[in-house]
Image 1 (tube, rainbow, N blue to C red):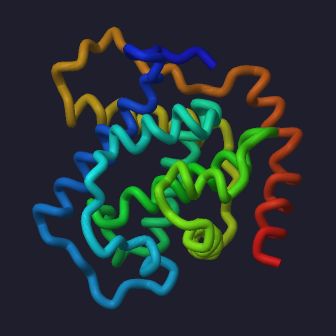
Image 2 (image 1 turned 90 degrees about the vertical axis):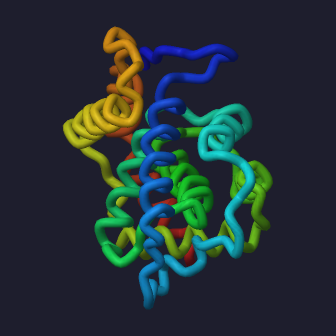
Length: 207
């Protein structure tokens, strides 16, 4: 996968995704959106207090330690959008975005990548306990209704969505810096060969 990198080896997808999510969380924080009652599958994602680490730094931490492919972050964004669409009373804000992020990335990496760290490792990276990580993963999967497959055309469309949202959030970014987040041939072939096995592995997590 071709990917533009920023200083210190941070890929552009991290910058784009963090900017989009930060803008969304800030807007919802400002509007004081705290719907009630929340769906059962969403309650566990709310922290008691706003995390001190920014979304950008949190994503950079995940990138440095989780070592998942860049395409996982796009797929995680797709999963987040599906989850929120299925639970319209839930608004992404500063109290839930971090837990939703670590859980969506964990889910994406298990579906997309052949090799990945276990839940205990992701829990340490995300700053939560293993019990919380396991519980969040199960809630997220049920909240998604196990709809984990992402067709290449959907993947490509979300890349465009991220680009447009990022341009609106930060119009000073030069247009020449494009987000190259389409599947490479190798990633596309691996995804087609392994997606059924990955889905079965996800379902086995709750047995």
